[in-house]
Length: 288
Image (cartoon, rainbow, N blue to C red):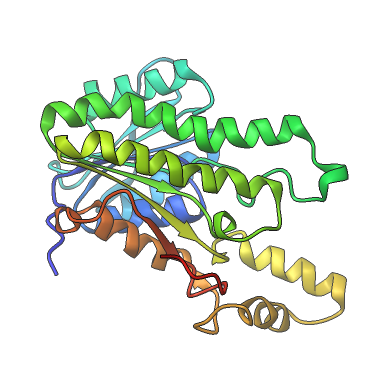
């Protein structure tokens, strides 16, 4: 299926690792021009170079742009394609504004926003006695208010163009009790629905994708460490994790990226205001 994404321009926050990185790679493969952001400049530039190679770049040919050296343009063999990396902390209005200025001045605007910048699993994982309210506020400022900042910044550009896609990456903790940080994912559902009702008239869809347990570059070391603590093997740890997943295995980040690519495409114009699970059928709750 042709997703009709060639030439679209995507801004992906939290794009240096994990699911954000996988989405950046998948959209690049579909012909999308990519701008990725992250707070960690080393990880950001390493991922940008990997994407550049995948897009046909001669490695190492980059140019700094914007204030300081926190933004770079990657010169590609195919001059019709664009790749930018911008260091940005989405908890800060000024850095979101700078990110959008670079996107509009150098990148040519934003058609697709993927909000993904957040601490995996959240910062508050213990019981009520140990729940740190400052950590919870940081979680909310990053994943809920940070997503709102980015959407608020890009929406006027999308409205003028009469087309846009906003994809919020949440998590299946929205549908399962267990951690207090999970409330941030449930908050995204309400925000997504509210946004979709407001922006639909301009040809902009807004959806949230809920990944479950997902294989990323963090997974192997994490499961290896758990296996050593428990005196077992990594394969046995992964099998135990997968036992609660309907498909019987842990979903790979690339599979979440496939869902995001479709939702980002013109083919998905009928889908908006929805919360879409991409966790392999984890959990037993029924959602109408």
